[in-house]
Image (cartoon, rainbow, N blue to C red; front, top):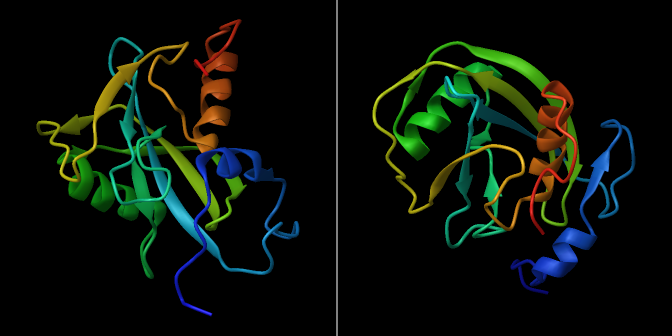
Length: 169
């Protein structure tokens, strides 16, 4: 048996990804640790929000998501978000406002997504991992959208009294 994970198609990933009610809920993929992730929901003065594409070489490459990354040992969610957004997209954020938390059970990982809204930042956006960026509104035009992004779009729809599909595809 090799240490390399089995290849999983995008269709299988979509079909086998689940929103989990709590960290105590059993995983479809066996027991595994929960990875804490800090996610930035950057909102500009016009109400648009920033999505970035996942870079080549990563799981779900090309899928659109809100930027962020893993919380390292000893970091708060805001510390991790500040570090990740500087490393990935070249900006320095102002205050991060905790918004929602979501558990996702992906085939490759079980993650707790800690979504924080960010309304202030400094610096020019620089896609340092070869990803793309798009300022979006509902319905989102960038496709495909990462499964963990879809609930966020639904939260935006509720806040903004938006009726209809939140994204294409």
